[in-house]
Length: 379
Image (cartoon, rainbow, N blue to C red; front, top):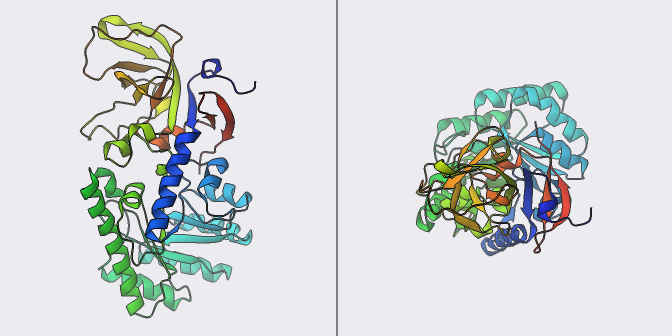
């Protein structure tokens, strides 16, 4: 079927608005050019060759991945410069070596002496080097070593003495997802920059070159005013955006390029409910907007043009059933959508929602399907 309209699609299905996506890509590209820094897009959100090709500066990379399956897929497509941005587990080092044997320049990260020792032992046993970055904790959000910690220098010395000098340092300001408004985001971006640059400075003072200084999250990448001392930025969810990003002020709802097409399958009028065929299996259980000023439930309900439909959200979700109702809880005066009507639901978090699907239905400005782009899941 050539360019089917949305009403010809079985639901739930994952829609990608190409025009919105391209605007988002151009926005990030312009920001990186303004700041004069390299860009290493994170492909974990899209997990799709067609999308990622539009992010990359060249067909061979660089890119950032969060799984080695992603690295495999992109290596098979000719990408040669890949950063695996999750602290390495010893049982994955053989996989990294296989990728290196294919000609991929793999970078791995770690944040402990224990992990550094495991990498050194595998390097000696295989007679193969590894390119290692030390992860820095810039905000107490997740993993990494503090920029002023003695352990940072101990890790650097251990790697250096084993003939694996640190390639650099990297950090991720995950706490930026809890910021709200431009000033808070700008402050977090500067905190991220200062932490990772300080870590690099300390290593350099001990004679380590530390050529790579890498940072990034979508909120800080788009909010940074100065990236002096940084060599590259990583970001991923900006390509689609989502309700969490809109809630912290990084984007507008109209910038969200990803949605789930769903169909009305029933009603509970006395409760003000419209029942859809898209539950948490289609939307994910992510409730990232719950702690924000505007709680979007399990997703914001829109019309087929992607515009919010009154004040409807998914107030509840079972495995295959979504409960659409007024955000306010009112039951009277609601718009009635007959069985068979279709809506689009914007996700709280693009990554887990997209992970429920094997492909994107790419839609054009006429709301017709213009392409079918496969994506991959797993580890």
